[in-house]
Image 1 (cartoon, rainbow, N blue to C red):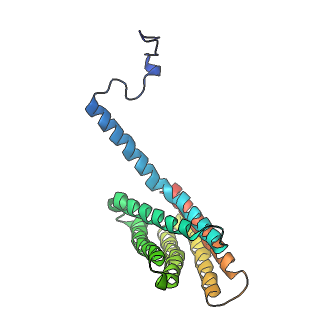
Image 2: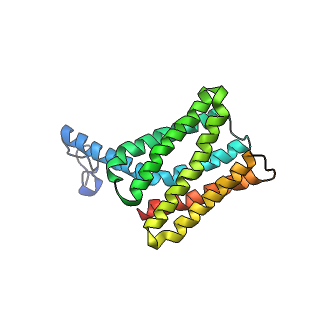
Image 3: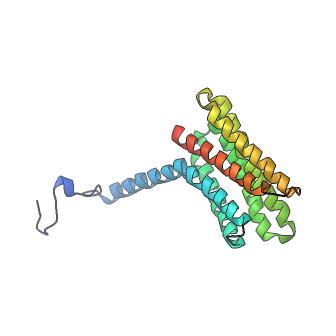
Length: 204
């Protein structure tokens, strides 16, 4: 029913924060914010991984500008740092410990990619290190996860193989092989890693 102001004061019409003291409000906000951060940490990789490889493919075709790729590197470095800082203590055993190591290595090669934009004389070497590193490191993580989870061995091993074969094809294009090696390689890497990471997000 309506109160003196005409607003709904029934239990169904009250907001979750109604009647809270300032300290209670701060505690509620902290809980809500913590839950949001946890959701981002747990679900973010399933979105970030495919988007990252779409961006790489767009860069291969010169659809996006170098500045956009630079910003993408910064976003990725920030997300990985956030992921490690908020999830470090929860990733101490099993497959999660392996992925923690992958993320630490991934942060290093992402920073190398950022360096490519800051030091033009070393750009090619740094960008290649970053790109190929992100092809290989997750493939290792997927294979490791498959070895630890018999019930999911097929999907993780298949994802690792796709990523590894894709990395090999892309390296072949860098060594001078002509044709669609680079494009097919990037597609395989993106597909393999997306399938693996989406399964990991839903499974864990």
